[in-house]
Image (cartoon, rainbow, N blue to C red; front, side):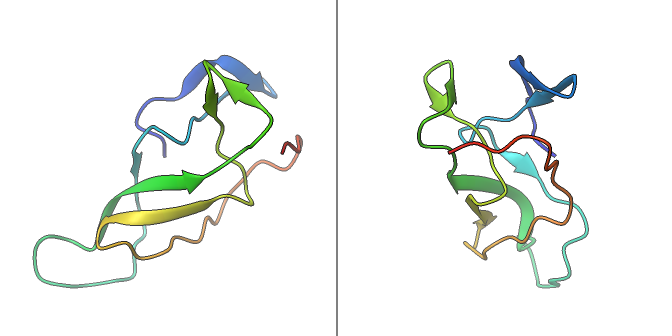
Length: 85
């Protein structure tokens, strides 16, 4: 879940997310001593031509990594109604 959804651009009435916003991670299968391996995440790639407030949006084809260890994330739920580049 994004920690701060972007209300300026809506998809099916729901706010979008900017890649600059940290995400809270749930359902992480990794177990390790502190710090936990994937409590938060950061998107590193997103849209290239569609922006909001001058920033790229999160898309299914983008890439995200967990913080602090950089493990790639695999999104399990994404809306597929709108496609963007």
